[in-house]
Each structure stands twice: as structure tokens, then as C-alpha cells.
Image (tube, rainbow, N blue to C red; front, side, top):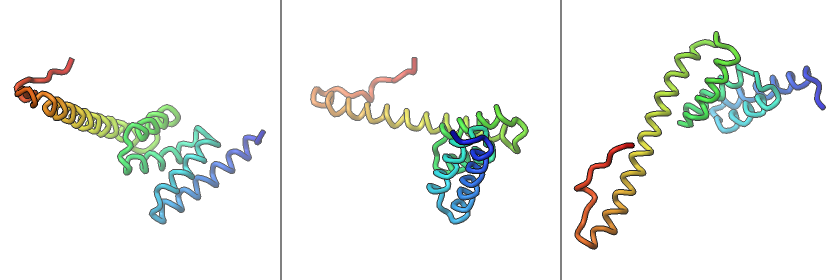
Length: 130
């Protein structure tokens, strides 16, 4: 079992490597390093903040929001975190609605493809959310 101070040093090492990869415009490698830093020190707010930004840039809003909420839990005074949570919630909701509309549109097209053979179309029906 690794002593706590050694885990802390390992987490700092991975965090610093992540920052280097980030500055080299290699976000995938940076994210892996931040993941490792958080694995060694789950309460490492700085690594979570960097990872949250990468996830946001990759449009993985749900995962970025998880990191943001964890940061609020660990350090509510983290700069701009409350604004980030609100923004990520909005982006996540927008992405979900867009995906939902795409799925419903594809289902409608599929239905029209089969029903068209019988002279029926789903265009005449209105879909309501329950």
C-alpha cells in the first residue's frame, strides 16, 4: 500500500504532466494524466478543474458537469465554479434535447418508410411529450 504522502506526490506529477500535454495541444494525453492524478488523489481539485475544461471542449458535458459538481463539493470557493456548473447544465440540456430530436426524427422517418407503403404518413400526427 502506497503511503498518503507518496500518493500526493504521484498525483502532483501526473497533474504537471497533464498541464504539459495541455500546453502542447494534446488534450487526450492531458486528460489521461489528469485521470491518473485524480485516481491517486480523488480530492485533487486542480486536476478536476483541468479535466473539466478538456471535457467541456470535447462536448462531454455530462462528465464535465460531474467534475464541476465534485469541485463544488470539495472547494466551493474554486474560481468561477458556480458559473461553470450553470453553464454546463445548460449545455448538457441543449445537447440532450438535440439528440432527442434527432432520434425522434429518425424514428419518424423510419415509420414513414414502412407506413408509406400503405399510403399513410406520420407527418399528419403531432407528437407530445408525456
